[in-house]
Length: 256
Image (cartoon, rainbow, N blue to C red; front, side):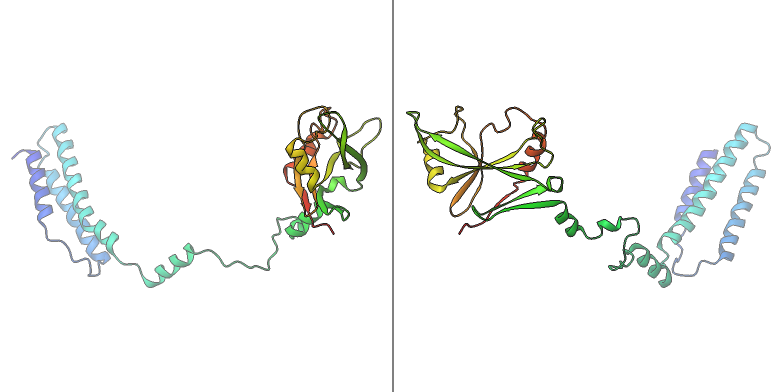
């Protein structure tokens, strides 16, 4: 019988062995006996092939080693995979998978103490301009603290170039504004509800440009709007004002 035929015959015999009872305790003595038998088998198989060429010896030894590994894997691996864990190990595994308890009262040492109370921080990051006459609030960055309110007026011109309507413009001015180096104001036009309705109908226009003011909000009596092309000259700070307006800072309040 050729070597490869012997190997396949050995493999068939191994597979035909009855499946071990894994429920019984697999002691170290049993493992030692299996290991010793495998070594005896390998040594006896090696003696039979001493008379063959060196190449045939290496092939036969390799086949015997593969057979020994295969037998060992069949007996040991299923036992290790199916053996139930002890109650202690299961309990430890569950504890390791769970999240550690969180102490809600513990202060994060890595966090700036000033950041512990986030709602208070958000309040202190902004300031509020309150206008009780027309009924609105306007939220500003903390850097605008010390702002000024500058009053101006708008005029509504009819199609025959007659001034038929007028109103007030309140401009919020940055505290660092200077005559020689002005910064961008935040202008707020005040319309009555009727004036705004006429403007939308085209009864009058404001300024030379055919662009209407953009609404910022309204309450029960007034409409608050941004003048058209208010930042056409792009003065210093116009980008900051654009960012402020993107956050809908005007909060209408019902006027008395």
